[in-house]
Structures are given as structure tokens and as C-alpha cells.
Length: 546
Image 1 (tube, rainbow, N blue to C red):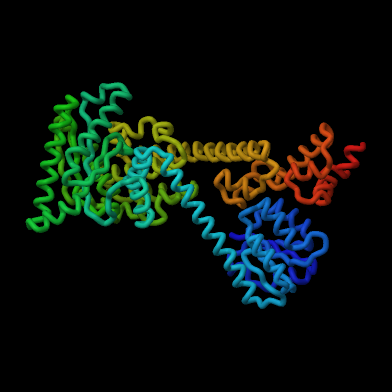
Image 2: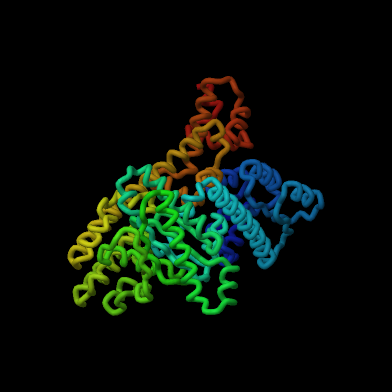
């Protein structure tokens, strides 16, 4: 939301505008008023003002001087001049100072609102460009494999995102998949030959398996490979557009597509066995629409791997359509999928609501005869939600529960409602404690950043808004965090640090007051003296002479 400052020595003008203009409709959150240039500068020091509307003709510091001083300190500030002077020289000077508009008095509400709306749109365009730039920097700085893996995990664990947002991420991370196209998931489990290796060797083997998959599938399929959230590897495959056209022309599309997939899998297993000297087992889901059916397919694959009787190493299991049902028992598990979802409640830190939802789910299960398969579906759903919110908070699931990803423990937990309830509620408490501590650490880190910025050699040039830009937070949110953590307003802290610097310069140097004024970023020695007296109880000259 926008903050705006009205400046006019005729206070009835600013009071009238403050009362009559429908500010909320324009998107203005708060309107400040000042009766002079120095008072306006004082407000700019303390508040995150976005737009200033000032009269030109004022005693002492006129509107053009105010605009020039403000622009030097806050270059992103939008300025609108409001005056009864129609002289061309004023207009020309306003243009030179890059005023966004120049309005002659008396002005109608409609014209005034139109001018303010233009300034707001200009700010929003600038903010959007700024956000895009920093998002691009973040995307480029990050390791693509990490970003791709994070996106894959989000989709597997059921995070909802718009098609536009997903498409943007796919393009930014150079993932050549099309939302809406049909895809298939391959869940890959390395055999015992690999699990006996140390961590670094296993990671290297997993990387090699991914490279082999990409090399052997790429002629017919787009592929996306990564380590899955649960203890396996996952390969997402989607036929190329040209492949789809060939199969459609050949007729019997679905049968031919499945045969092509089986051939690629056979070559893949043979290459892994030959190059890496070990077997892999695969669970292949039914085809689904990407990304909507991805979470259900992933859960079906996990359920098949854990609940199916143990087979020989190197087996391939193709799942049937029954595994892709998102809700294994719509009647008994309806409360699990009814909005708001568990992920939504955890993401918004509604811990008690999340606990209540789990109690509802387990209560429904106790009143209904549920199967082992349904118990495991609930386990997977809860694990996925916990894992997603833990990763988002910078935690790993293994830090919270070292046994949660163990297949044997998973089978034990999903053997009864009581065991599953005890585990889920205990882990929820642990998750809440860990993430609350993480939030506190993040806030403390932000406060340290602020102190470092203000204490730097160029700290005297900073304002609440410029500091917020450097820590990538909105000025209002940053001010709230700082006040909550320190008990002092951020604007007051900035001024206090300047005054401490002024005391040092007055006491330990021979610099004149006007030189100190300039060094501390103030434009007006009289205004600096006023601020100094307010904080120190005497003027700079009185302090130096005393």
C-alpha cells in the first residue's frame, strides 16, 4: 500500500484533501501532512513515503527546494507540484526536477485523483521491474539442479501453483515440459549393491543413473530426473511433440506409447547394469496429466513399493489405474482432503487448526473400518505436508524425525490408527517448535543486517525505504519487525545514530556545523540544528562551546 505526504503552508488545503479524497480507493494506505519544507523532510526521515504532493510557494524552503532536497535523498520518490502559479519558469524547473505532474490551483478532485493515480501506476511499474530483476538474479545465482529438484519436490508433495507460475519456473529453470501434456513417473530404487556404499559414492551413482536415463530416453521423451523426497529416485517422462504426432499417425496411440516406454526402460536397466555393475528396480505409474495428476501418481508409486510383497532385485512393476485414485476411500478419508488442506494450514502457521484437522481425520478413521492401504495413504499425505513445510522453513525431515523415511518404520506406523496419530501429533509439535525458532533466527539476522547497514560509512545516507530495499523487504514490514524486536522505531534508530555521529564530529573534529550537516546527509543546517536540539537538549554550537 502507498503512503503519501501533503505539504502546504496553508493547512486548510492539506486538511481538505486529506478528508475529501477517497484515498483507499486509490490504494493509499496513509496520508501525512506537513506545513513546511523542513517539517516535510522530518516526516520523510521517519516514514516510508512514496508520493509527495507539495505547494510551490512556501516561506523558508519552497516546494521546488523541497523537491530537490527530497529527490537527492530519496530518488524513487514521486513528486507532484500543486500551486497557484502558472508562470512557465516554475513549470520548466519542475520538469527539470522530474516532477511527475504539475497541477494549478484551484484543482478539481477528479484531476487531483487522476494525477495521484498516475504516480501510483508509475511506482507499481517500477516495483514490478525491480522484482523481476531480483527474481532473475536469484534464478541465475542458484544452482539449476537445486532449483529443479526443489520444484520437483513441491509438485510431488502437492503444492498448488497457477499454470502461469509453473510455466515461468519451467522456463526459468530450462525444464522443457508442457503443462497439460500426458506424462509418466518412474520411481527408481537402487539395489543393495548401491546401498552398501558411503554417502558420497551413492550420490555419484545417483547422478550417473540420472545421466544414463537422460541419454537413453531423450530421443523419444522429455525427461526430468532428481532425488525424490522419500527414499528413491524419480524420473518424469513426457513424449516429444514429434513423437506424439508419429504415434497418432501410426494408430493405436496408447498401446504404441506404452511399448515405446517399455523399450526405453529395458535399455535403461541394461545400461545401468553394464556401466554401474548393479541392478535397479522400477515402479512405473499410469499416464497422467502434468502436473495435476503428479501427486496422486507419486503416492500410488510409493504405496506400491512399500506395501507390495518383497520381490527380486531389478524388477519392473507397471501400476494399474486403481493406484491413481487420489482418495482411496472418499467416505472415510473425506476430512483429509476437505479444504483447507493440511499443507495450507501449516504454510500459514495455523498450528492449532492443523492439529484439529488431524484429530478430525483420525476420528473419522476410528469410526470407520479402514484398510492398511488407506492408513498408508494418510501417512503419505501427512508426511508430504510435513516435508514440504519443513523444506520451506530451511529444515530437513531427517532433522525432525530420523525414522520417518525408513520404509520399515513407515509400515509399522501405518499398521494402526493409534500409532499413526501419536506419530503425527508428536511430529507436528516438533515441527512447530523448530520453525518458530527458525523464524526468530531470521528476524535476528534481519536486525543485524540493519545495524550493519546503518553503522557503515555510508549509513548516514540511508532511510527506512533504502534499507528495506537492501534487505529485500517492504518498508512497512521491516519497520514492524524492527519495532517488535527492539522496541524502537527504525526511523528513530536511524536519527539516533546520526546524532551520535554528530556528537562525535562536534567533539573530536574542527569541522564547521554546516560541514557536519552535509556529511550526515542533511540539506538544511537549521533543520539539523533543530533535530540535534530535540535529541541532545542543546544546539550543536551550544554543545561545542560547553
